Length: 312
Ligand SMILES: NC(=O)c1ccc[n+]([C@@H]2O[C@H](COP(=O)([O-])OP(=O)(O)OC[C@H]3O[C@@H](n4cnc5c(N)ncnc54)[C@H](O)[C@@H]3O)[C@@H](O)[C@H]2O)c1
Picture 1 (cartoon, protein in one colour):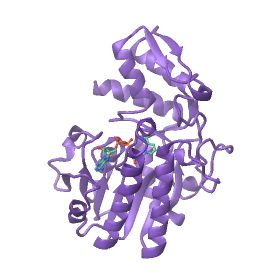
Picture 2 (cartoon, protein in one colour):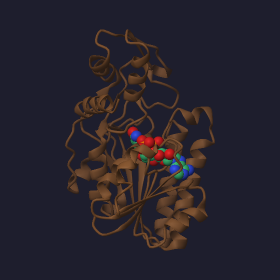
Picture 3 (cartoon, helix red, strand yellow):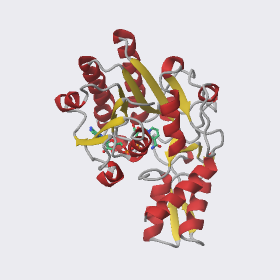
Picture 4 (cartoon, protein in one colour):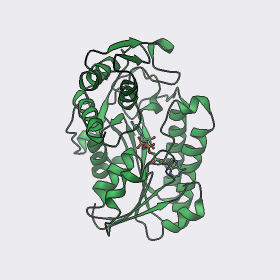
């Protein structure tokens, strides 16, 4: 991707800021974020770049958003409530931040005549799939969290806008994304807990939860290299999978050798209500279209644990 004007929502977040890092090399990037979970320090390194502008706005503010869409070629829409557990406490947050906001982005693009959208969806749309690795065409889709439901609803609006108004769209269903600037998920949670208590780590679920972990650089390269290809729907993950017990052991080995693990259980051995216990994505389609990932699941986790140490 070269010489484009690109708007990134959620630019100060974990994946958004890593995406900006790749895009600013050859494009002009407008990053927008309300800094609800994102941090300005994540994008500080681009502040002096002539290829980057940051605007603190809430994407629900359609007027402000439209002003930033002037002359934009592509929108990467990453802003969201990305905290699955938060949706259980407040059942409206995913609807508001993930469905309504996506509609606001789409409608603003229509009004401002922006032709292309790239969207960060999730493996959570598959719920407890009985086919693993799960292909893009698996169905029926029955998410078990409001987060998964909201991303599926957002996808549906993206497809209807594409068919009604000729929008080019690409939807990427990510596995668990880990790496530099990561702030949520099991690794961040374990490191936080171990920094308070170096002798014991409390782990949600029974430890056998097993998922695919993709390193953030591979996730970003997938979005950039695959957008606009083959009907615009791709899983992005790794073939390998990692258990929560392995993540706990790797984190302990790095930050608190000798700490004991205590598994506190959860619904059916999962971490919490809405947590998909076993997830894996069929990535044949992405690979057939030329995408290769560099870091396998266990190594992605290990690398992300080291990244967190380097950032402390
Ligand atoms: N991290 C993962 O493992 C993972 C997996 C699957 C999908 N995703 C999706 O990828 C995207 C990025 O996730 P992330 O892990 O970087 O999370 P994140 O919380 O770090 O990033 C989200 C960003 O959006 C911003 N934001 C939220 N609501 C906003 C609003 N109304 N207006 C403006 N900005 C707003 C936040 O401040 C934050 O910077 C999300 O859409 C998430 O659902 C993430």
